[in-house]
Amino acid sequence: MTLDIRDWRKIDAPWLSAALARRGIDAKVKDFTTRPVGTGQIGDCVRFTLTYDSAPADAPTTLVGKFPADGEASRATGVALWNYYREVKFYNELQATARIATPTCYFADVNEESHDFVLIMGDLSPAEQGDQLAGVTLDQAKLVAAESAKLNAAYWNDDSLNERPWVMETENAPQSVPPEMFPVVWDQFVERYGDRVSDAARHIGKHLSTSMEAYGELRHGGPRALIHADFRPDNMMFASDKGGAPITVVDWQCFAYGPPAADLGYFVAGALTAEERRTHGDGIISLYKAELARQGVADYADDMLQKHYVIGAYQLFLTAYFAAVMVTQTERGDNMFFRMLNGGVDLITDHRAEDWLA
Image (cartoon, rainbow, N blue to C red; front, side, top):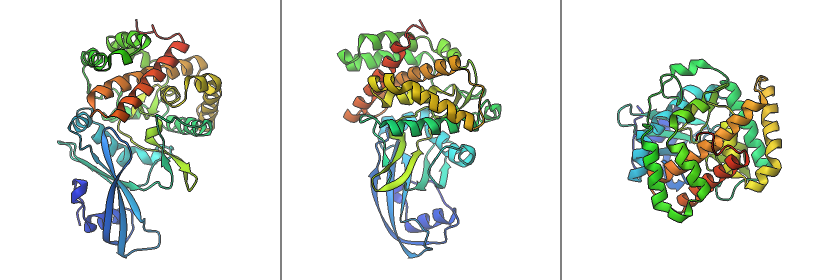
């Protein structure tokens, strides 16, 4: 059977059997059930629970599929920003050499014109999805720091990424969002949320949204590496009391060739409280740098690493306000975006970097 791109509601048993065959699993799916999983804002995930007519002992009993979002605004954003296209390209071309822990991919394909896509992955349960609102433990933060270093080291100053225009921030990457759109979206964000936006956030948002050229120049100083660019708990699976891998990183829709430690700053600012970050941040950065060295990278100067770390907080702030306006609005989404936005503000101001773009 030739696998095609289809809505998850139209997937049938022969289609799933063919997807398994792509990974060398000779199994005949008899029947299956589905249920939504995860809290994605741009894509929708569905768990397929399988029963077989025949299958080898190692055939999975569950799979997870990712598909375009049902929400019209979220789907339009995923298409406009090339998120769906980019994620399929990651699994098909970069996953094998990325070093970072990622899900098994059974099938990934995207329509080059419509950006409709299907991504079928191994089910990571009993590991559990991280929660941006709940934050993470210190042990989990240390795991994340090490995984970030592995990803960065895999493509450290690797200019061959410039040959892939679907990697953001490469020389040939298209400009998916015109600079003049950022202040418009910022004004919409402030209008929508009013007094919920602090004075410090208003100051940073005004300067950031109207200084995208300066922000871009800031991001391109020093070494570069492949970064996840949406490196937060909701895009990670952690081992639970019932088991699962220690950490697996998912949601590869936004990766870029950018400032390496930006992922770490993005994560720490959004996933730890300000007090936790002030107490443990230096130790997490040291762990990250030590893992980089183990992975073969020893030329990341401390001052440049710190600069990139703070740039990650700016990126977190930018992602939060832009996504809050552009995706389908939900109560959880609003709370999550403000956790991200305010975490970015705290890290930026702690490093006296609020006027870097002024």
